[in-house]
Image (cartoon, rainbow over all chains, first blue to last red; front, side, top):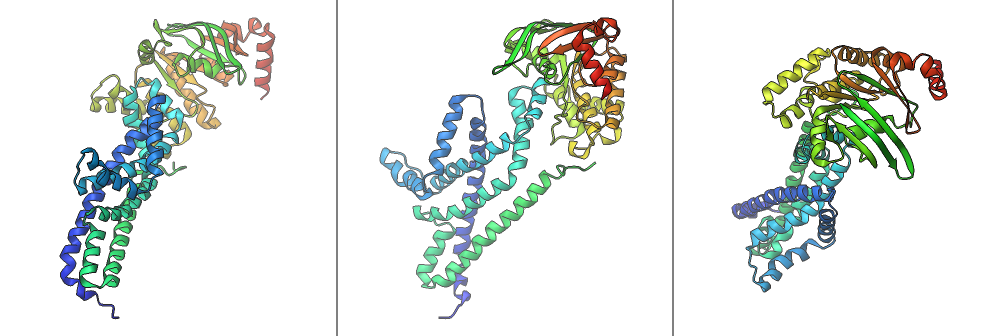
Length: 223
Length: 243
């Protein structure tokens, strides 16, 4: 057999459509999991035992169930009790919830790593709790969390390929279709492989840049 | 007036403050001396509400610090400077100083930052106003810390071993600022190991030993026969002077 990428030429628009869907789903899921992670991470470090417990339960459940099982439950299970959500929305929501379990843990450790003295300084200056969270805790925790959050997001992108199992023709889904139409799985999946590698590699470069930018004044010992 | 009556504070089985009565009036500079572990820092942390007190009462201008509603009023009236500076690492010197005036006193940002720059100028940090804490030396950081406390125009300045983390040169930078503040009539509670400096700026000395206030005397009396008549004080002073 001959390795010939040219036979994919006429399928490129279709594959690009799939890639675009992957990008949209991932972008929304990154935002969703970040927002969820912030809320749950804050709950996990709050003084309230109830909020703390609820957050811990959420993290434990969603980190310990295979993503595909969560996804099937949302997409094939929920309609049984009358809840119908389209594949794209289900995919984004499921990715956000699953990702949120990981981001919240990252943000929690970012919060716990803050020097308590810094928070005490904010308290005695009379700042309200919500202001301390917004202006002190969150910015410091996020700066420290950029890199670990980045690896969660890259995992999220990789995991998004599983959305093809709920009829969503994102990058992997459309590649599967092209492969079965052309009978050229080798070329098709080779392109798919390169596409995911390029996607995650550029995300990790962006994360690195963001980390350096946000932490540009943190080099110790500079006078 | 800061009024402390019957203050008790324990951490687990260890009683750190065991019945403290102390009053600090406007315009006074009160130095709190005592060996390590005598409860000096805990006393400050009780006044600004960072530690819950077990018994007794602390009021700042009449506001009871153990009542959550009154604590915020009490905190508006006092400013704290910490041993380890505790600056906000993600904010510049100006932002560190201006944050509380903007958020708590609702001063417009521009005005708050202009006032912050003025304060930083007064402690010789004009050039470093836009630097981040990590770009400042220890002495510079502590000067920012002092400005941050002063920005709230507190009636009382609480200083918790503010030079303990600094080398002698930086210590003198910071002490000269405190001396200038004392001259302007700023009320200060000064927890310190700098005996000679405490002597030079304080109107009164409070001496803590094993959680009890065993001396509360005008400065010169403390350092004269009256203070020396107390065995613990005499022992402490002779030890500190030898070092």
